[in-house]
Length: 208
Image (cartoon, rainbow, N blue to C red):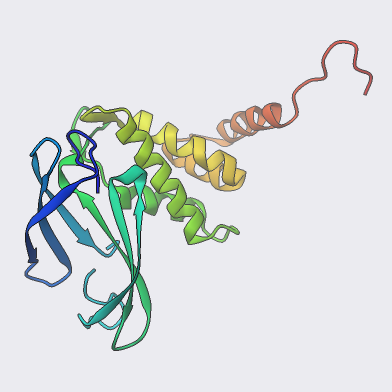
């Protein structure tokens, strides 16, 4: 896991504690590069307890580094019901504030992005893996800005950029909520723009 301060992928775990509800593990880490100390939290996107039967006995199947080195994904198998699930460990210090349209600020929450995408992709041929890929891409885009705050308008545009490439129907659904379409003409204007990009006019000298 990379240090959120200097980006060095070399640390040691100082302390580990399980939350009172058993659904998370907090780890205190120290970067061996700059000696910064920071916390990480692992949840089942999140539980350490099985999200299906709530038993806390499991075995680790696979570990991958994700999100540019700033997260660890662990695939686990519950020893009670034998179902598999994933946990993600992320740095607490990477928290970013979202500036809403009314000027108020709230913590950046990847789950809210996922929920918005799931609604837009309802009954479309889009897998959970594809939705998760967009969430990761947006989260990476936000953190790559290296700023402690991001405007909600920028966040929405990032989501739409990735969603437009995946499914145009889902894109229009998301845009209708995000851009607050007021009537049918708003939909028509958005569709006209999409059609223009998909079918650019023929250049001079072309004979179609």
